[in-house]
Length: 404
Image (cartoon, rainbow, N blue to C red):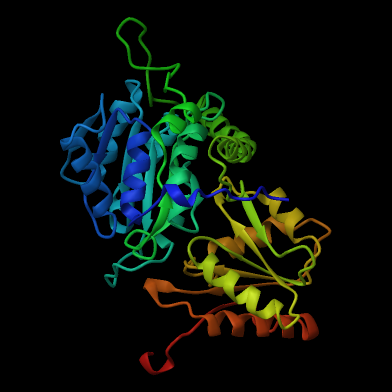
């Protein structure tokens, strides 16, 4: 059973989600911040620049750059030189970083970056879905998805502790839904500096650029060596599975707050229908589950916090007693007509003894509202799947036929 959250209401303050993230980054004591403003991430870097101007982040350099590509490129050098580094971006800015994302991961640089999830152009959309981060799933970055403002704040410190572990040394994307979380004002407990100093030790990298001890980062590797680099990255990802769980528990021990490790479950003990999802939609799903439980509908929720590394074993264990699994994705793999979480969940269950039906819904593209009645409709359809089997394996939801 998951630990009970201990939110001290006396410590709560009402702030914008972006401020909570900027404050979390500040108290993690970064040495270098480099970012380029882009909606809906802009308020994070505005707040950080104000902290810098007010002298609230000691021993830190804020690098002004001309693009997101430059922002992350600057952190390659800074991290290789031994600095704790932070950035934030979204959508087209993250896609512009694509080449450098591989460099950061391949050099095993534990950069932490907040991704304020936003739809990808074209057409231009500034609203939320998960296509931007999902499109970077194979670049070698951990991807953690937050349900609410409190979790995204707390997840920032956890990401540093995971990434900087000497057995991991992989960068992290800490993902929050654009506008839904970044621009909402709600009560949170901001990360306390004294507790964060206790939880997150000073960064002391083992490998740094130093003329007294020459090393190469990202050097040329011919076919005799390249495979082993990729193998070692994958091994680090696998070790991160346990580290993510351990750090979630360590965070609870220090702060008294817990959101799950790799996954979190809600009312799944006797659930016949289990819904899987990531991000802020979790809150809406919980409300629907509570409503339907009052009508004796046995439905539960599997919240996926870690998309990379993918927690296949934990997911298998959580789903083992379900009669049907419903996966909600705020993204699409074009040409496959499936969302990424759906595809990878099916893959993780293949060659196992679990053979319950799994259906996928692509939902909320470009920030379209995900309403309670739509979730209820999906659960109604899941009940039919239990009775008659799958008729449509994966589908878009809420398509406006008149616009086609």
